[in-house]
Image 1 (spheres, rainbow, N blue to C red):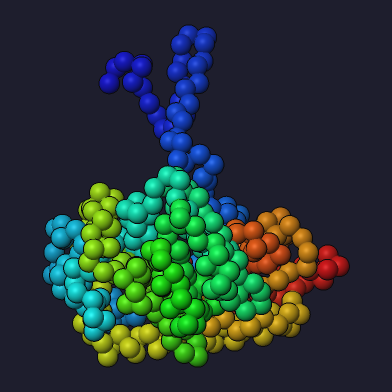
Image 2 (image 1 turned 180 degrees about the horizontal axis):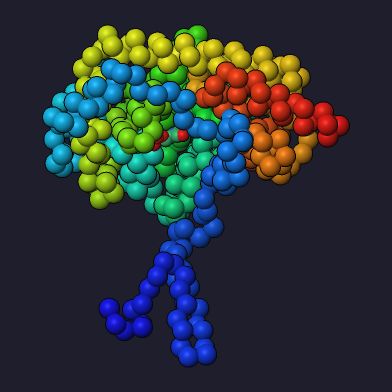
Length: 395
Ligand SMILES: Cc1ncc(COP(=O)(O)O)c(C=O)c1O
């Protein structure tokens, strides 16, 4: 391309016209106005090699020899071609399992995040309202904004972070298009009870139940919303259960009529999930005994890490929080302060990374999210560092 008028490099470019330097700034689409890299990414960017990272949102688990073998086999013998848009029939059958859902009611996606994006693109119009938990996973509100809708927070209250179903019902208006539910919760580690889930499933609007942490639980498996009503879309995936965050394998499950537009959106976003990741997921789900043992090991590891985190939090930060029932996060109150500055200071001065609670909504202010997806020594040392820093600051 020779014409300067068509000369582009990234989003901001400078054309040298003799002495005159004209800055040409390409404006992003209005739907992205004000949308930036998440606070989580900004805090993680402060990490130095010396930092203890308790800010991570992924399991500290590596594939064992067996899982690697399955992956090698999937790469060597699996297809490298496009799969059907919603995923291979064999994988969709395995994901549907004995849930009563048909394979055409399952769409395999590039991670849970893409399932969420597809659902928002398929169902949410400008002017709509989307009910999101506060505090909650920050992508929900952002996805609503990208779709031109308004995220309407419903409040969760410490220390149990229960969903008040009556209060949530009162937030429903004729504009409410989706209600987002996340159990076990990121960042809270809390789990929602059956009765509340049933009430929400029958509230009227479509419900998206994000169950990506469903396999990471402690005393009892968390109840699922799958099949609670025709309005429910369950999303999940293998990122957290199998430490496959980089392989991007997720899904959505919903009644056929609800699923149709989601598959259409997914087709234009991703075409299909990675054929390799689908082959690997299939190999895993075809081995239920191996998979059960894997998941039990994962849960046993997180149980030890949770114990370590709770002990250190009680001793070093002098707070008792209800033990998280699922996922691998502790949402911990800290002495009154601006927690963004606090988290940044901890990163630079105490060499420990945590996420400020306000990254998850206004009701997260006053809390930090400590991820205990870390080595036992790092958990005690990192939380110890926070305690030492607080004491040195006279808090
Ligand atoms: C609540 C929640 N939903 C969805 C996701 C996205 O998961 P995936 O890697 O499957 O896209 C995450 C990742 O942190 C999460 O915490």
